[in-house]
Length: 437
Image 1 (cartoon, rainbow, N blue to C red):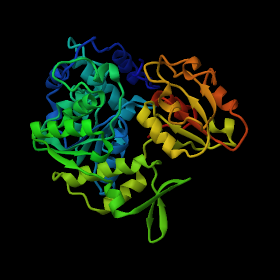
Image 2 (tube, one colour):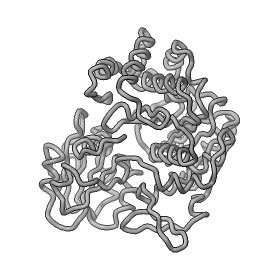
Image 3 (cartoon, rainbow, N blue to C red):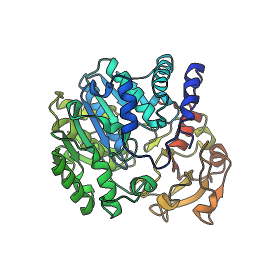
Image 4 (spheres, rainbow, N blue to C red):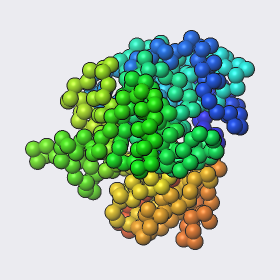
């Protein structure tokens, strides 16, 4: 999987080429390598501003986006590291509110890669070491850190209780089975319980652990409670959205809206599932004591949040003009849980353009959308091994690229949905001149 990206800056590209040569040794698990790398860099993970650490199968990136928006609405300066990037590698490292600039990124990656000689770290371990190194150098009020894969053995899980403000677990589902469900002694055997076990591995003694209790199966709830108890984490469970307790929300063709004094204010991230993600972010802010955050920052952040390729209505651009009689929505969802969230959002037929990595379930989106897919076109995911049209059934039509698919959407009033991969979503944003900033 070519996850490292490209850059128009030669100095950055030289370091990305070095990153591209890294691979995770088969079967290696644990945090020893990233800890050794960070030690060579002066252990920056121990000198960070208060950290909000977020795990989950779906929605953890959105929770991070809400956290950033709420903190910034309160006047705070925030470092953020998330993954994957959509268009540019720089998206993974946001320093004091701004994406890291090319010149500094080239220097930073060179420093970390030089320090990593002989350790054989992974792409993600180098990325997290780079992010933490920069975050420790530049003053800020808070850090928001998204778990990459799982939690227990994720490179971000080197964070100690002293720097953590709160940990959170977003929605749970079955994904990345090869890694997260790998046979191991002494771990839960039921799949969703094992997923919960891996995600809850970020729990730390004395640190608030905020969870979406009502959204988890009972097996997962049991595991999370057990881990919180054994680690000494301070568990915060909420049976319903704190947003729902404070405001009336409705869902219509324009997405989720808040009603105050009979006036509706748009909530930027679409879909009812985003209410829960916003609630988790709010709950994490309320559960911690390291940073004071005013109540007004909550809804102010909800109104300002930006998180591309999550139920995003594409703006007019070079791609949308190819099918300008249709609304075109973009979502990077690729697993069954994401499929159900997408299906809940669209209550009418759609023209589906899908591209999906070949290690994902091709039915993940089709089954939830059953009966609503008016046409189905399958495109490759650039630079990745992806499913051919035959994997999606007899009605699927193969297209060479997203442009060809858009040109072949039937002329009617139905919405176009492009989904199945964040890597595909990044290509769509690039082609439509909507580069994340």
